[in-house]
Length: 291
Image 1 (cartoon, rainbow, N blue to C red):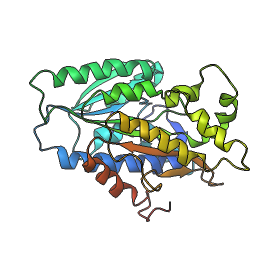
Image 2 (cartoon, rainbow, N blue to C red; image 1 turned 60 degrees about the vertical axis):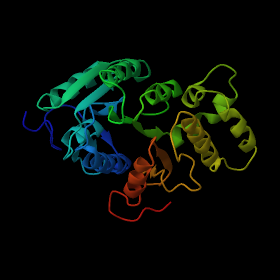
Image 3 (cartoon, one colour; image 1 turned 120 degrees about the vertical axis):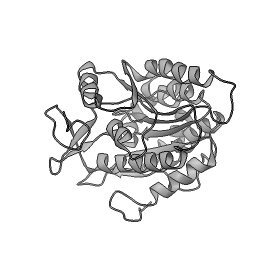
Image 4 (cartoon, helix red, strand yellow; image 1 turned 90 degrees about the vertical axis):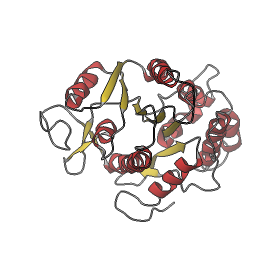
C-alpha cells in the first residue's frame, strides 16, 4: 500500500507505453508544478485538476520496464497539490485500480465512471456550484483540465462544456497520427464522423479539400490546429493562434520518429500561456526542443 503513490510496481496491472508518453507527461508535470506553485497562496475557493481519461494512474515504459506515474498520480504527488480532483474513466476495472492507488491521498477526489464526453457535464456542474456559493469574484475556482484520450475520442462539445467555467486551463491531446489515418475516409463519408465530432463541425473538410490533391498532406496540421485554436478563441481563450509551432510539442515514435500527437494548450489568461511557453522550451531530457 505504501507504493501506491510512488513510481514503483505495486502489484496492479499497468499499461505499456513508449518514450513519447514519458515526454508528454513531463510537460504536464512541469506545467502543474508551475501552475500550483504560483497560485497556491491566493484565496481561490478551490483549485481543481480534471482528468477525463484517467486510466489506472501508472504505466510501464516499453524500453526498460520502469514504472512511471500517470497524469492523475502526477497531479496528486506534485509538491503543491490541488485542493480538488475530478477523475473520469470509462473502464470500470481501470477505475477500480485508480481508486486503490488514490486511497492514501489526503486531497478531495471525485471519481466518475463512464464516457468522458458525458461525465464532463457532472464535473462542470460540481465546479460551477462551488463558484456560485458566494458572490462571483476574481477568486472563484481555478481549474486545469488534461484531455488525453487514446485517439480521437475527445469531442468538441466536451471542450465547450469545460469552457463554461470561467478559469479553466486546458491541455489537449491532438492525435496527428489518428487524423492522418482517418482524414480521407471521413472526408468521403457524408454522415457525421469521429473527426466531425472532434472539431465540432464539418469545416475541417474544407481544409482537407485544399490538401487532398497534393503529394503530401503533412502540412495540413498547421491549418487544422489553427482552425481548432480559432474555435477555442471564440470560447474566450486568449493568444491561441501562434505563428509557429513552438508551443505545440510534437511527440514521435521511438524508432522511426514518425509524428504521433501534439499537445495544445489554452488559457483565458496570458499568464497561463507564459507558463506553457516556459515549460515547452525544453524537453524531458532538459534539451532545448526542436520545432
